[in-house]
Image 1 (cartoon, rainbow over the protein chains, first blue to last red):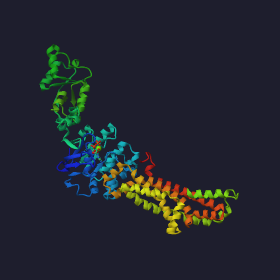
Image 2: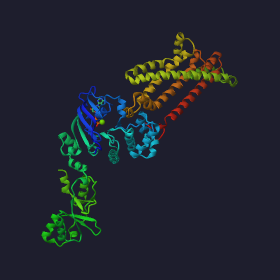
Image 3: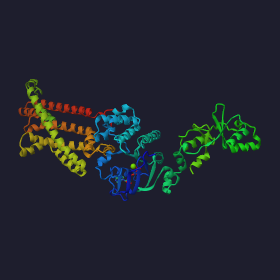
Image 4: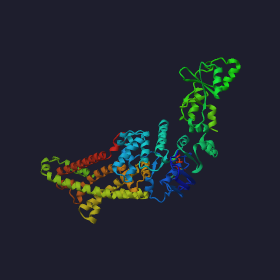
Length: 379
Length: 235
Ligand SMILES: Nc1ncnc2c1ncn2[C@@H]1O[C@H](COP(=O)(O)OP(=O)(O)OP(=O)(O)O)[C@@H](O)[C@H]1O
Ligand SMILES: [Mg+2]
C-alpha cells in the first residue's frame, strides 16, 4: 500500500539489548528493514521485546549493540532530541500533558522546532480535523476528553511536525473494541492520505493483520520468528510458534484480507420465479453458467440454484415445475459489493443458507461468489 | 507556632495580676510602630523564603538527578529543622553576632527540609508516561524540566511554600531576640515592661499575617493551575 515504496525508511541491523542485571537479552540480533511508506506491525507475546525495539528506534533506549539507520543515516549521529523531533511517537499510555490544552499538546513538536505561532495554530486546526476531533476540542484540557478522543490527540501530536516516520506502541489497547476498530480504520485512511512509514506495536494478531503491510512476529527474547506480508504469514507460517501465535482461524483471517473485487466471480443465469425448471436449464446452458439466480416480480433475488441440481430435478421428472416452487423459503442470497472482505461475504452466505452471494456491480450480467469460489481463493 | 506559644505563656504569667489584657489606647498610639514592624517582619520573611527556595531548588535538582544524594540532603535538613529555634539563635550569636543575617541563617535553615522534600515529591509525582512522552517528543532535559515537570509539580511545590511561609512568619517573631524588629519586638517589649498589650498585639499580628499569606498563596496556586480545576481534576 506504500505510495512510494522505493527506499528503506528504518534499517535495523544485529540489534541487541541487554538490560543490566537481566539473565538474557530482551532483544537479540534483530535485523529488519522497514520500507518507506509501509506499515509494519510488531507482534509477539508479552515481554518479547516489542516496546524495547520500538524505543531503540528513537533512542528512548540505547542499544547494547547493533545499528539502526533512519532514512539512510545512522541514528546515533544526530543529537537525540533532533532525531526524536523527526520521528512521531505515540506512547502506549497516551501521555498527554495534563497542564496543556489539547491544542498546545498537539503543537508541542512544531513549537520545539521553532515554527511561527500562526503556522502552528493553522497546523493544529488541520490535525484536529484530520483525526476527527471537533474544532472546539483544542481549547479543552486532556482530562475533559474521552479515552478515545485522547488517543486521537496522541496521534495528532505525533503527526504534528509531519514526520516521515511514525512509531506507535499499542496505541489502541486502552479503548473498547468498537472504538478500536474505528480508530484502526481512521489510521488506515490517514495512512492512505499522508503515506507515512509506520511501525506499530501490538499484541493483537488481528490488529497486526489488519494494519500491517508486513508483520514481524517476535518470539521470547526478541528473536524474529517471521517477517512477511499478512497473507504469506497466514498461508505459510515458518514454524510451530508462528502457527500457534496466528491461531486456528488462519484461513478465516486470510479471507479477511481479501476483497470481493480481488477474486473471480462467475456469471449466473437470471430467471424469474415463474420459469420452469426446463426453461431455467435452457437459459443456464445457453450461457454456460453453473448457477441460476432466481428473481421475483420486483427483480429482487430470492434464491440461488446450482445448475447441477436443476439437472437432477429435470431427470427425476420435475422439468415442468417452476423454479419458485423448488426454492426453500428464506434463502435469499446476500448482495455484496466489490469492497466487501471475503470473510464477511462468507459469513453472510453462511447466514443466508443460499450457497453464494450476488455481486452488485455495474456489469449487466449478474455475477455470484459461491462457497467453492471462496475456498479457491485460499489456494 | 513558637512565637504565639511564647506570647501565650507570657500572657498566662500575667493573668493573675488582673490587669486588663489589652489597652486599646496604647495600641492606637502605636499604629506607626505596627506599620514599621510589619514591614520588618515581611522583609525578614521574604528574604528567608527567597534564599531558602533558591538553595533548596539547587539541592532538589541534585537529589533528582543523583538519587543517592537525596537521603543525606534530607537527613541534614531534618537536623536543621529539629534544632530549637531559640537555641539556634543563641548558638549563632557568638559566630555572626546580632543582626539581620544571623536571623536569616537560622530562618533559612528551617525552610530547607520543607522545600527540598516538596520539590522532589512534586517532580517525582509527575506521571512516568508524561515524562516519557516529553522525551519522545524531543524535549531536551532542561526543556522537559521547565515545560513539563515544574508546571506539574507546582501544586506540591506551592504546598511546601505555604508551610514554609507560615513557619518562617512564626519564627521571625522569635528572631527578635537577636536584635531584629518584626512583631517579636512588641512581644519582647511587653515582657520587659511586664505589660501584656504589646505581647497580645505581636501574637495576633503574627497569626494574622501567617493566615493572610497562606490564603494568598492558595489563591495564587489555583490561578496558576487552571487545568487542575476543571472536570476530571487533571492528574
Ligand atoms: N527498564 C528495564 N530494565 C530491565 N528489564 C526490562 C526493562 N524494560 C523491559 N525489561 C524486560 O525486557 C523484556 C522485554 O520488555 P518489553 O517491554 O520490550 O516487552 P514487550 O514485548 O513490549 O511486552 P508487552 O507486550 O508486555 O508490552 C521483558 O522481559 C522486560 O521484563
Ligand atoms: Mg510493550
